Length: 387
Image 1: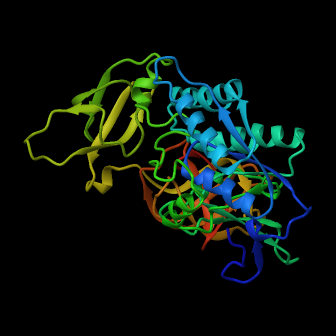
Image 2: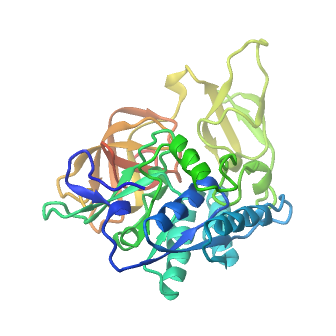
Image 3: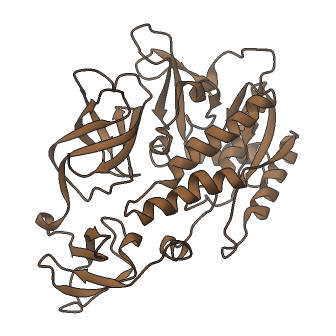
C-alpha cells in the first residue's frame, strides 16, 4: 500500500498518511473476496491493529444462500493473516435501507441504484457506527477509490474522493453519498493499485482467495434476475409494448420492471428476422405501457437538456458555488462522462443540471455523479428528465 500525492501535488493519500497512534485500530469489511482481503493484509503490514468483519445481510428465501460460503472465505483470509474475525449481523438494516427502498422505487416507476444505498447506509453507515462503538479508529473496504487529504485553506473540503487508479475497476460512482465524517474514518488500501497488482499481492501474502473470481451484481446479494426478484414483491401485469406511433408491437411483463435503454425482457413482432433490436425509450406506469425504438432512431429516445436532482451531496464543497459550476457528469456506472453545468439550489439538497446538447436515455432514480478530472465531487438522485 503506497502513499503519495495526487497529480496536482496538493494532498496526501489517506492510505499513506502517518499513523495517528502507535497502532490505530481498524475494522476491515471482509466480503470473502480478494480486494478486501488484500486491504486487510496491507493495513496489517503497515502497522495497523486489524480486525476482519464479515457483514451478514438479508437474503430472500427464494434465492440461493451464498452468505455462508462467502463468510467461510472471509474467515480463511483472516486466519491466513492471523487477525481477529467478527460477524456483524445487519439483516434488518439491509432489508429496510436497501431492499425495501429498491422495491419502493421500482414500484413508483423509477430505477434505483441499490449499490449506492448499500454504501450509504450499510458499509459506511451501520458498519462505521459499529466500529466507532467498539473502539475502532477507522474502517477499511476493498473499494477501488482514493481518499485525498487536503491541507490547503483554499480547498473547501479537507477530505476529497478520487477515482481509483484502475480505471476499469473504479468505484467512485457508487460512493458519492459519503460525508466528510465518513471519509475521515475510512481507508481504501487498494485504491491506488491496479487489479493485477492486487492479485499478485494476494499470492504474495498467501491468501487462499487470491484467484477467486470477482463478485458480480448487487451489493452483497450478487447476480440476480431483477425482474423475477421484483415479481415476488410487486403486483405486475402484462401490458402492451408500443412503437413511436403508439401502435401495439409486442408485450411486456409489467412497465415498472423496465429501465430506459433496456433491450431485453419484452417481446416485439419484428418485420424481418434481421431487424435491429429494440430499446426501451419510455414507459407509462399508470397505463402500464412500454415504448420502444431502434437504437439509431435518436429522435425517438428520451432526450433531456436539463435534469433535476434531489438528495444532493457535495463532497468537494465546490458544487454549492452560488454562480454554478462546470463539470463532467456520469448518469450511470461506466457511462460516458459528459460536460454539464451544475447549479445547486437554495438549501443545498437539490440541483439543476444543464447539458450543452441533449442527453438520451436518462432514467429517474439513478445517480448522477459529478467529476473534476480524477476527483469525484459529489452527486444526487435524478428526479426528472426535464426541469
